[in-house]
Image 1: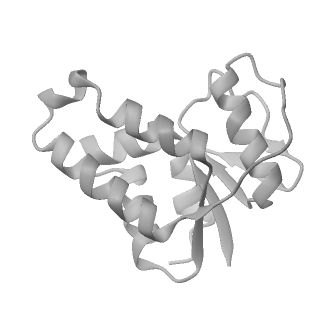
Image 2: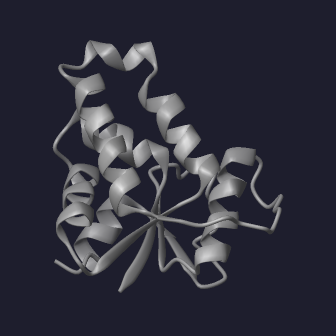
Length: 139
């Protein structure tokens, strides 16, 4: 079973348009071969970002976001990272690496290529939604 972490930007993109993030989200909730890994901090970030007023300009964004968050809470496996890292300039991105280390994720999927200059952290490959969907998604 694959263990994946979805950066918040993947969720936002998947809720706005039908693209690779949308396809990945669909696969996560319809596959028994993918385990979505979260932490309390990441779940808090999901809620905070997906409820921003700026996204209300997209049709049904907030309704879809609420439904997605409920699905994540039902499907995802909660981990409690104990390591504190300072590898990446953005502290929120370090929290993703801490989660990756704790759950031994196979993939951290992010559209944030500006901050994630590294392509691997320990056992975790850090890849784009396109790279994941085209080459690693077990569909």
